[in-house]
Length: 382
Ligand SMILES: CC(C)=CCC/C(C)=C/CC/C(C)=C/C=C/C(C)=C/C=C/C=C(C)/C=C/C=C(C)/C=C/C=C(C)/C=C/CC(C)(C)O
Ligand SMILES: C[S@@+](CC[C@H](N)C(=O)[O-])C[C@H]1O[C@@H](n2cnc3c(N)ncnc32)[C@H](O)[C@@H]1O
Image 1 (cartoon, rainbow, N blue to C red):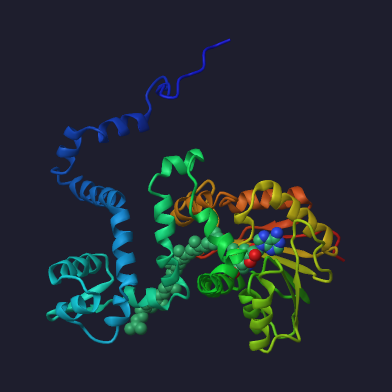
Image 2 (spheres, helix red, strand yellow):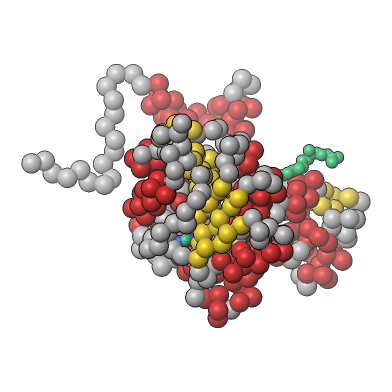
């Protein structure tokens, strides 16, 4: 038996010449950096790498500046006309010199433009205002930020994270205790659904489908969007009993009650409603363990008719090609939630295959910060 390799053992250096080893050793040397930042052919690249590094180092400050701007409602205040520092400072009850620091920081981040003596919202800041649910998402980041204070403890599973309690509180028993908070955040989940629905419907076609069952459909924002785009589609929403009354209310208001059947229950314990020739799981899998998702996919497979379609849409990891939204933000978000994880399209495709689905498609995600999609079919269509 060999001794266990200590955690800190350096990786064994490969024999022979390794270009990457040579490169990394060079670039990690302060003397080389100093030379490269002076040499005409490398100095531009060296400066850009320095800027990229600095942005990584300072990213948490950028996020907190953004949070302060949103919390103080400076976007609305500066949308239509430039505002002087004095006005902004009085409004926010912040001393003028500190207000200047905040406005300068946020201007450097691209959220405002300096106009005359004051500040006005930039195009990027205006775009932020127009993304449904984004301001609410930023505001709830105080919770995620506290969890990320010790990312190593989160990684080791040693931290009692606040996010693990946050959404269950919003959707579950806590809702009764504090209906305002619950309402605000279920609204946020529904608002942020607008972009997810738009991106999902741009990515997949529902042609040929007559009846869509949305499992974990929340308050019905996805089906409402699908229903508007597909006037002859019949729909069923399935979610926990505590959630479905809000969905019923939404469908009533949207004049869709006649086309949507709403069923309360748990996909863990109850049979799925029958009749759908397609089933959607929108932002559902990433909240759950592999075991739960496997059982759910098997249940969906059994519930679908031959030729029936499963559609999974949620923010995903980039897998072999990691990307920031899926592999940094959503992966850590799900980790802090403690019940699920961000999976790649390839991983979800594999799980669908294990459940028996065929013809699996993983269309390229155009906006992976909104959602990615995987679809599959139950074999046996005529
Ligand atoms: C008009 C003139 C003169 C010129 C036009 C120039 C032009 C074309 C400008 C473009 C402006 C424009 C239309 C911009 C659009 C920008 C958009 C749509 C941006 C969208 C951004 C979306 C973002 C950043 C989304 C972020 C989503 C987040 C952070 C979601 C988090 C979700 C979480 C944490 C969910 C958790 C739920 C749980 C419990 C895990 O299931
Ligand atoms: C992140 S939300 C997504 C809601 C909606 N699909 C959307 O994208 O806006 C996850 C949903 O799954 C539902 N859910 C969680 N566990 C469930 C279960 N065992 N049975 C049915 N629904 C469940 C939650 O109530 C919640 O509405």
